[in-house]
View: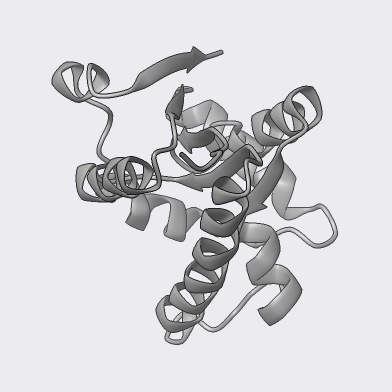
Amino acid sequence: MPVTGRIHALHGFIGSGKTTLARTLETQLGALRFTSDEWMTALYGQDPPADEFPVLFRRVMTVMEAQWTRAVTLGVPVILDHGFWTRAARDELRAQASALGAPLTLHVLAVPDAEARRRVQARNLQPGALLIADATFDLFRPRFEPLTPAEEALQDVTRWP
C-alpha cells in the first residue's frame, strides 16, 4: 500500500484567517502549503481583471491540484488554503482524498462578517495581497455555504478560533 500524506483543507469565507492558520500548520506539521491567493498574485498580479478572473483562477487551481495530489501520494502532508465554499467543492475533495487513500481534516474558520471585512481591508494595504474590494466581499458572501452537521460527520473537523 502506498504511503500517503494527510490533507488539511481550510473552510472559511474571505477574511476568516485561513492563510494565517495555513502558515501556522505548515510550520507545525512540516506540510506543503497551497494558497490560491498567493499563486494568483504571483502569476497575474494583485488585481486581475474581473472578467478574466474565473479563467485565471481555474488555471491556478488545476496546476495546484496536480502538485498537491502528487505530494500526498509521496507521503507529504498538504494544506489546502482555498476555502471550499460549497458543499459540492467539499464533496469533490472528500472523493479525491478517498481515491488517494489520504486522510482528510477539514479546518473550519468562522468570524463575524464585520471582523472579516476589517481584516480584508487591512490585508488590501499589504504589498502582494490579492485585492478584495468591499463590493466583491458583498458579491461573494451569499455564495458561501457553511458546513452542515451532517457533513461534519464525513471527515475529521477542527474549529478555529
